[in-house]
Length: 243
Image 1 (cartoon, rainbow, N blue to C red):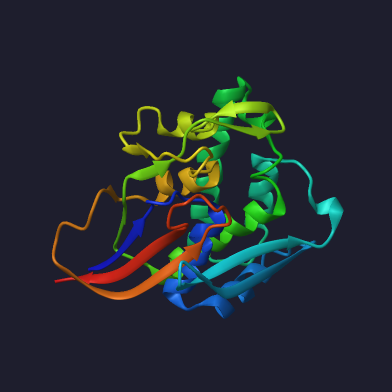
Image 2 (cartoon, rainbow, N blue to C red):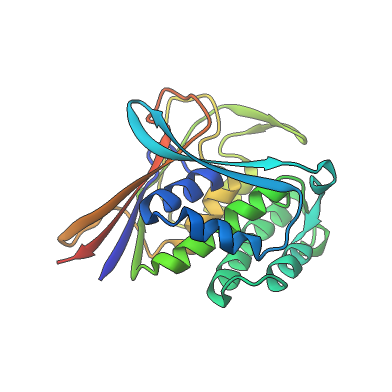
């Protein structure tokens, strides 16, 4: 049985997830070719090997090249982009599942029906690329089981376009409510778990915890985080086989 273990001890975000998946799979070229099938203009995807804490890892950066692409989109508009693309059916289904998870949390937080929720961050090009790219590589790896560690988040407050909001940020708190997913609070005065990262966990996790059966670790990958938090600062993935 193929197992994918994801260590969230430094938090989790969309770009960290995509970087770790690209690193552990070695499929950067395949990812780039598949993302072209989104027919989404206005961005350039930069995938680079960098060193952080003396460890080589993969950094993913979505650079916006057309200002008009930084627009708000609702869940249904995002689904139209995904459905019209040429990515695999499994990647389409998983992408839409993650977006729905986040959309429902945002709708709950803001007290709006789903169709009235517009994504200023998740609906932006970079997050569409992060989420669909994640679905593309999970489909390529095709693990039998995905296990996440407990989530590690910061504390305090962060500033967004809505003003000052607490950590965990409201959309993340809404997704975690009643989920049974354990969260460990780090002494870091910032957000470590983003809505995109939490949506990915909610939709991909078969288990939360550790790998309890014997297994061989076949590949290890690291997705670099952008923040300097005093923690390791990367999402680690281990791909292996149960014994």
